[in-house]
Image (cartoon, rainbow, N blue to C red; front, side, top):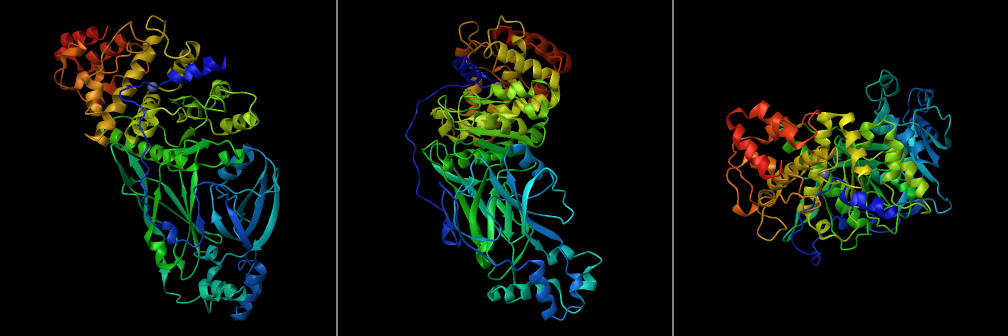
Length: 587
Ligand SMILES: [Zn+2]
């Protein structure tokens, strides 16, 4: 049964043009040197290590004392406007609730020195629970949560722009108050040169591996900056450049965190060690910066030969976040419907001996289908092993964050080593997501049910196989086209571009497990000519990718249905040639 499920997902939504063989990985030693700029050690594998608890300058008590020293009108003005709290989280539902309330959650306490930033932190005394630290408003409703209030806070910045500001700050301003509060707790060196401020900015890049390794931008990556309870946010642009919204004074230690989350996608990963870590989107703490170092941050996500490493997982997450950005861009440029926003994307490196999502990649769109009754069953289908110690926990997490897109990079497949192959697989799944956004739930539920019932794509003679044939043909056409836009002549295929690959598709109807799916047919609608060895009769030309997608309607559930719709909508002048083309693909 497990084996069968594995097979289902080995085929599920993924088509592979296998050319080449497994090659040795080359890890370049280049690093952008960000570690030299940060105050704490950054490690790619292992646990975060805390140092001393730091005296908190923002407590109401300390702020009142500072306010008095400055000669403020009345310390009655200084009242709790935030509470520094921690929640004890036992299940993903609780953490999701807090997140949906707009709280920024941290497993690392906000009032501790950090000696080493690793990939996770948990209080060593806890077992299968985690403390999450944040600030909440004084009127926060704690009903149903296990929590502790650590400090009542007065955060002067929150009064900016309010009516009370002028009555609190009539002879000095909020920064003077913060400075005085800092001095009282021994942070005098953070209060100099009031006019000098530093905005976190810089570049985030990732190693791209194709024929050689180069560094390319990480696109639309969320960057958070934090000093005490003061958070800033920014996103990298298509050059990997970001600027955060907040500015910080001299000598203040500002923590910078990369979060794999944006308007397009939330990226999570199944991890084997700390199950609660799955509650969060993938993230990487890249250290603490001060002064001018804040304005020249450079961080490079490196590759790794070890598929079980945190380094490799982040590297995959970079490819995912870049691919979804590129997919949206290319869709817009080519007149294709974009996928729904805020997709849930799950990565896993688990193999069949462990817990896993699909064994390749898939676009089940389970969060989007949402209220459908297949959700719970659908989620469980993605877990191929029961009896694992945290199987139940993983199901819980997946039910809270149902996968729209999954990608398993565990199998040592050479495809998972090359950036162009990985991106093409992501484009393929996102092409399904675009199609889903056009055709809706009913179409997609039927699609998934067919795949499950037939343990994969089934046979061309199976009732309903037409839906698979046309959907997969679209996804592979779109993926190859987008991969060609992105990678051009630099690919991991020996002397072939992604355009060559789709052009050379050989429709081997009836003799292959998957060549009955007409991968090349849409490309042939758009190009001129055909290599003779494919035996495809292609006298059609001049159509656009947008037209190819235009006929992917909700009631088009077969290849013939597609060609008829296409002729009706766009094909009047080349009807005979279109018929010839589809016939040579076996339809
Ligand atoms: Zn597919």
